[in-house]
Length: 99
Picture 1 (cartoon, rainbow, N blue to C red):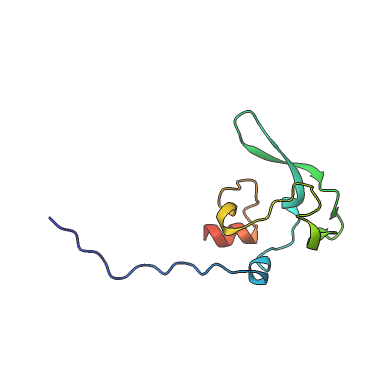
Picture 2 (cartoon, one colour; picture 1 turned 180 degrees about the horizontal axis):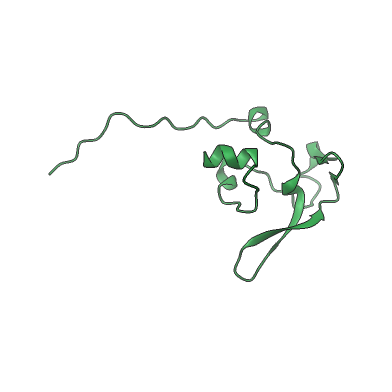
């Protein structure tokens, strides 16, 4: 018995690039807090903010240079966001990637 392939495939999402990707961020600052990994490999956010996070407005004070500062700032991308279970469900990046 042969199976017929459907000619209709769901469209693949268009991944925003550059400023369009950055615009998905809600600027909640939740990703700017230290995390610890337990013995089982689960990541847990802490209440310790990055030293560059302005706690009042939740903005990074060195945003343009954040990856050069050596603070362990992780560049969020469509490729890694799906695997970052510590991002809040409300995260714009996570919501875009998870659909």
